[in-house]
Image: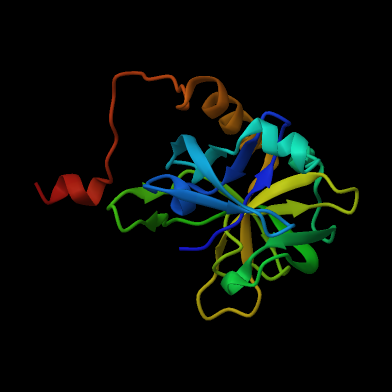
Length: 202
């Protein structure tokens, strides 16, 4: 399984997708200098399809790795230029260029992982024609100032370069919780919801 990710601090925290690393038994990170490091899973959130892994802090210093910073996805507009970075089809260090189509696309169906978990069901997505292919998952979608405005996550089957990224404003909040607590802390009102058609079949 191949995915992508990006460093967010000098402590070694790396953001990726839950469907890339959230249920992994072992995670290996290949740096741009082709050095391979074993990483630790810090936490994952299947509902937003985000996960945080960690590489050794001393390696960040040794290789002088520079973290990326989150930008403001709310400031994105249709037509803005973006770059999708990652390892599409295991082709490492690849970059594609495109425009934002919409900033709040809702997809009614999440993804079902091999573990049976559903992921990404409650996201709204940045849609872009910057090519996002299998292997790009977890990589950064960046603006022309080099700030992360999204986390690459999905592509449309049979489409020609229709890809989707998790907005950075969502990612920053989720990642903050994962780094601090290992899980996302959400409120709970004591009620569960189900589609009416399921209820009618009971």
